[in-house]
Every structure is written in structure tokens, then in C-alpha cells.
Length: 328
Image 1 (cartoon, helix red, strand yellow):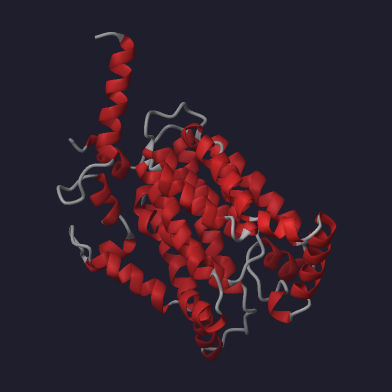
Image 2 (cartoon, rainbow, N blue to C red):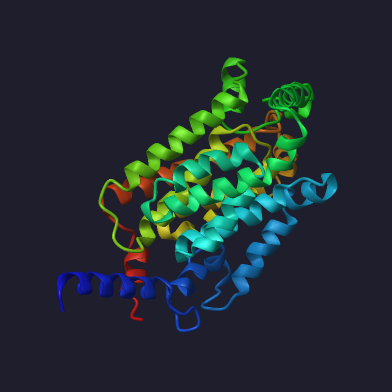
């Protein structure tokens, strides 16, 4: 057997290990059991903790706000879950569908596209998904002139920012911090570009060491980098942060510190407005609507930085190492 055949066999065996049967305790089974929610529920191989995770999402501000206002936040949450599934399983169709859905909200989709496109196995998927998203936008382009579209976007953006609920005090991330500590309002377009550049840089750092076939550690690092960076930099609302849900399910793959940080972030995001009211009744100062969600975003981002740095140093948490060692 020559070197090429050996390399192909190794890639096949590696992929089979990553996609091992959940019922037989394969890595996808480990993925199901690796979240803080699973540990708290004592799931032990049953899907009970997934029900708890779904209940968390359903009872959170993301679901209630989406149902009340008809927002697309739940659709974005579903898209981020598909993104996680596509990356972890290397399933291109799932990943492509996730990217097309995320493109429906470009301020979220653009930074994630930039991160995924830097992964060699998924570059073509990202490009094709971008083209499909462009084709879906053709009807609007055919019925309205380019100048008319730009004028409409400008007018809509001005109208959007005229509402108090869409101002930095009520929004999350860097924009909220800049307003809180400096009274400065940062343009949303600038923050989208900053998010795209930062997520791309983090992925490049994560793949500093040459990735192995079906590199699960790199996939998880990319997922954390893209989602955590997007939520920290882009001007969003608390209900948009449901896209972080897959990171709760995969937190334990980053080790103890990222798990603790993600757990704190998930707690702060569950019902931030109710938590702020409780803290105020306990005698603490009144908080702006976006403060607790912003702290949660910082927790997720620090967890992502830790996971990316470990991948860059070619060191893995014991959990990921055990996943690779599971026999087919």
C-alpha cells in the first residue's frame, strides 16, 4: 500500500471516528453529553439534557421576544445550530443551508462567512452559499434600481436608529461598552467590518498548526470564534444572542475554564431583563438593558479566545483527545 492510499485510509478512519454512533457512545454521543446542561442533568447518554437545552431556549427572552414581535431571532438560532452540526460532522449540505439562512441577516452572516471561508474543506461551500444568497436577492434587484436600493437602505437605517430600543444603551457588545464608558456611538457598519476581520484573524490563529483530516478541534474553535466574535462586535439585541446556543452544548470541549465562562454567559442571557430587576431590588444600581447581555458576550468571547489559543498551540482538552481515541 503506497503513501497516497495510506493517507486516504487515514482520512476515512478519522472521519468515521468523528461521526461515530451516538448510541454506541461515539463522538457525536460525546457531543450530546459534553455540555454543562448535561452535567447538571446527569444525562449519562440519554437525550434528556437536550430537552433541558431546548426548554432553556424556549423559555428564554429569545423565544418570547420572537413570538411577540415576529422577529427572525429564532430562525437565526436554528441556523447557528445547523452551522454547528455542519462543522462538527463535516456535512457540506447542512453547513451550506446554515450559511444561506444566516445571510438573511447580513450583520450576523458576514462575519461568520469570513470565518468559514478560511477553512480549506469548506471554502467552496461558503462561496456557493454566498452565490445562492445572491440569487435569492435577484428579485429585489430586478424590480428596483441599484440607487433605489441604496437609498432605501440608508433611509431604513436612519429610521431604525431613530428608535430608542435600537440605540447603544439597549444594544449589546462593543457598541454598548463604548456608550457606557465613553458616551460614544460607533456606526454599525464599522462594527460589522471589525467583526469580520476579527473572526477571520482568530480562525487563522486557530489553524496555525496544519489541521489534520476532519479536525474536530479546529471546527469547534472556528464555531466559537465566529459566533462569539459576531455577538461581541456587531450591534445586536439580547434576543439576537440565541445564536450562541450551540456553544452552550459544546462548552465542555474547551475545558474547565471555557465551560464555566459559557455557563455564566448562558445564565445571564436566559432572562436578562428579569435578572436586572432582581439585582435592582437587592439594592444594586439600575442597569441599562444591554449591560448584562454584553457581559455574557464577553464571557463567550473569552472562552472562544482560550479555545482558539489551545488549537494554535496544538494542545487539546482531554475531552477532545478522548473523542479522537474512540474506536469506530
